[in-house]
Image (spheres, rainbow, N blue to C red):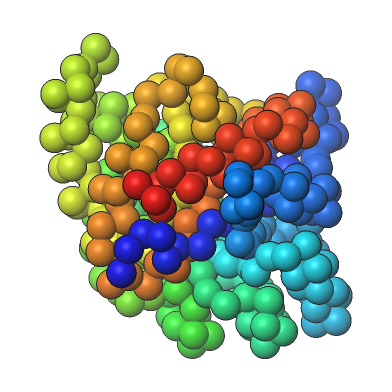
Length: 339
């Protein structure tokens, strides 16, 4: 099966992540506006096929009634889109709390997974959602507390993720843990692999690879012992290092984000610093998006991947409101599936 069979999705959460009402923050962008931005994108008649979706306010009340959720599904379908992967509201300040925390915090995390599974079923039964995963992470911002006792921290996250995976399996869903340098216990390629292997449920808990975030894995930003490259690396050094990382994590990868990174970290609002998402055509981008994607998507069908998604968190609203942004993104994603 060729990459051309993959559907192209756009993420809705760039309208929310890093946004807010506090001083210095930009306001969130509504779901309908994000849908309209996506629907307007067009490259020689090719358009986005679907969207991936964050299950929290102001886009979605995770406690919404079935009828309210069906109304959201109707809206998304009316714009010409399927619903794909869903992001569970696992963080403190949403429904959940740290997967590395107390029993009470763990229970909140698991409640968020249960809510996501319930919403997924409504969308599935509606017919709007035809595939995809539920995305999670450790919801433990930063690595300082984890570093105080790495073995204990990872063991606690493994326990939480194992319980979450069992909940997902009972609902016929799969969980994908997003690798980012800002999430404790998931902040390097090696720690991420230890976590996945510790849970040991590849049929239910896998990896969600993001090109921008995993680039920082190479550099060992929060785990220098696990760095595969040093600043000033050559192209001849880059590709063997990239292959080593992807060979380790690709067997676990069940969800994939196309993105660009300029080698910097970035945070906005209450989001901790992580791999900076850049526009798809950013001249400072470090990644050959098409070639890097091929490393992750090798044998994609064997892992049940049916779509890929763009992720551009923490872009300024002026960037998100510019139609050229979305056409550049769509063009890059077409390049991935057409080679």
